[in-house]
Structure formats: structure tokens, C-alpha cells
Image 1: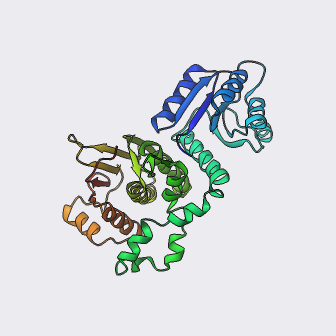
Image 2: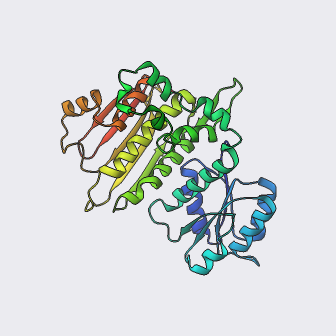
Image 3: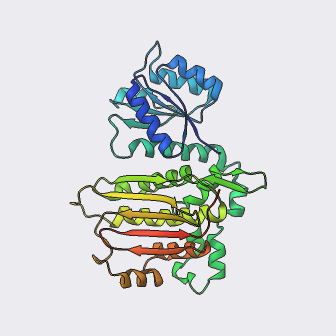
Length: 338
């Protein structure tokens, strides 16, 4: 599917720029921000966006819902609606094939990013999964199944391996890789790390947010690399396991300013890259003992930690866990992609 191109239609300049900034921060390409339905139609004709983020109240003769219907009828472009008033009338008018999500104004937490991520996942499922299903099935379990085959003595923790490998939520990172990957001149499929990991983070939040009773802020600082399958998929699986664990277990209901921060950086000499997932929650067993955290990584006590350790081994990475002032997982990978 490649780089995602998004058109923003919003007649309030400040809100439009805010939407643009938030989407570009996580790796999407915002074609333009326009204030009217007529301009949205013109830009869609010229640029063919993958998705439109559309306010209902617009300048000109057409409101957002009429513009959305026009864009769908003409170009089959999915729409995410942004509005300050999602009433029954609005929902009835928007109950069409083109409506891929709603976001209320003002934006709370990561609602905008989650809505766009869900819409793009739906686009991939409807447009690409059927067409590319054979390719995905051929590669789907790499490198997970390869690791299991070579480490059968350790993979007994899984139980039913077929059920495990068919867990499409746990291994969404693999589906997502093939929806975004582009083939380079050497025939190698690669993704942009910023867009790939951002999409995966918001997918994970959306899957687990209803299991907790508190708001969590997701903060992302991800450097843009080209990652091939051998790096992207193990890192994606590690990210999913760590973020989902933080969402479910890192915080108590009365915890204030609950935050999960994800960073992807290089060191000064660009000799390695570091993936860091950190929360400011209760920590591991309320202890900062390095001995305790080393023992946890050496002998994982949960399937999630076992997967983190396993995937780190596939990319020859060092994994470090710290339970002081929250939980921090660092994966140090001894190579720097382009």
C-alpha cells in the first residue's frame, strides 16, 4: 500500500493545522488542508488521496456529509468525519459505505490517531487482503514460525501452536508490514518505521483501551528508517507485546497522568538503534532491583515476555528491562537501517 496520502477538509485554520501536525507526526503524508467541499473535490481529482479527514461544517455550498458522499460516488475515497456534534441525525446521514469513522471535537487523548488507524486497517482489509492473501500466507509466520522451529525446546510454552500462529490480533504487525511494504530496486520489501510503528501503536491501544478504566496518553518519538521484514516484524511484535502489557497492567485506576512513551532512536555513531517502551506506572513488583529484572528476562514468566525475548534473539538484539519509576523496556539492535 505504501505511503498514506491524506486530505484534510476543515474550515477552521487552527484546527486544520492541528490535524495536519498530528497526522504528520506519526508518518502520514497530508496532501493539503482545504476549507471547502469544492476544493476537496478538486484536490481529490488531482491527487487521489487514500483517506479524507472531513469536518461537517464547511465553507461553500456543500457541507461535509454532502462532500463526503460526492467524493465516494466519484472516487470511492473513504472518509473519517470530524465534528463537534455527533447526534442521531448526523449518524443517520453518515451511515453510508464511505464513513470509516467519527472523531469528536475537541480531540481527547489519541482519538484522532486511533480513528485514522482503524480506517486505514479497514481499507487494507477490504482492498488488499483478498488480493494479496496468497503472498501473506506464504510469509505470514516469518520470523515467528522459523524461530519456533529452531527452538522447539523453548516454544513448548505456547501450547497449541496453530491457534497461536493464527492469532491475527497478536500478530497484526505482520499483516501491517505487508499492507505498507514497498519493493526496492533489489526486490526487498521495506516499510517506513515511523508510519509502521505509529499505526501499530494506535491499533494496540484501540484493542485494549476498553479493558481499562483510565485515560492513557500515548507519546511517540520515532525516527524514520527503511526497515525490511527481518527487522520490522520482530520489532513490531516486541512493540505490540510491550505496549499491550503496559496498557493492561502498568497503572492503577487512581494513577494520575498515565503515560506510555515509545521512542526509536540511533546512538551518536549510528552503530545501533534503540527501541524504548516506557511507562510511568507502578513498575515491576514495585522494585528497581537489576537482579530481579534480569531474572525476568532470562526466564520469562509470561507469553508476552517470552515473545519479546524470542524476537529480540532473532535480530541479535540486547533486551533490557527496568522496573524503577514505572517499567522501561529497551531493545538495542546492532545495526542501522537506511
